[in-house]
Image (cartoon, rainbow, N blue to C red; front, side):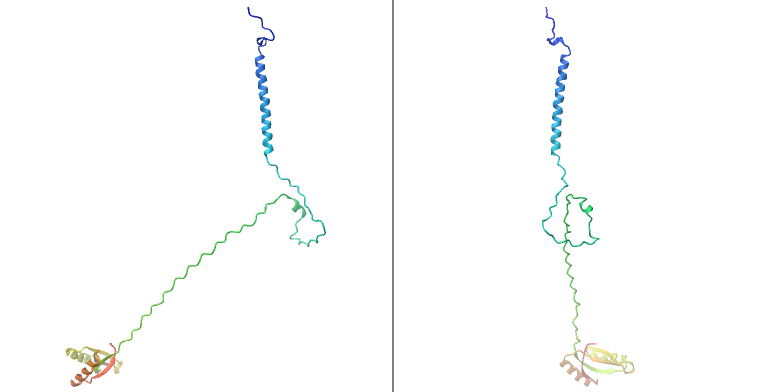
Length: 199
């Protein structure tokens, strides 16, 4: 026969197990609260504090020269000067990089105008056999001399009623010109040796 449960026996109080669980939960909640408080306190300690704005101005001891009067336009009132005693960051002016000017391209050389050498006409000996007032007469004499194997040119000279048509054999060398003059005179021409250029 089993003994009767007493107050010290676990089965004496059916809610003892529930009370035990609640007690452990309370202890766990307290431990978690302490841990959370310690963690938040350490985080707050790591947060940087703002810089103090109070500062002390040390003035030199001794007599100092009186400050020169400042124009009213440049004077700064005391409240404005002390209104913001905090540190001010003054940035030095940064000068923009100065780029060197691009070198100017060298001017292209202007080609000098080519001057063609002046060719002076070559003066050669001719044999003039006559100067005629009409061109048909000069052309007739030319055909006759060309038939004899000579090189003949007809060149006009003068103008108006004074215009003449010269009939010349040439150009020739000096020796040929002398022989042609002699033969032309024998044939009845008024031949003469002249120096001239090709017409």
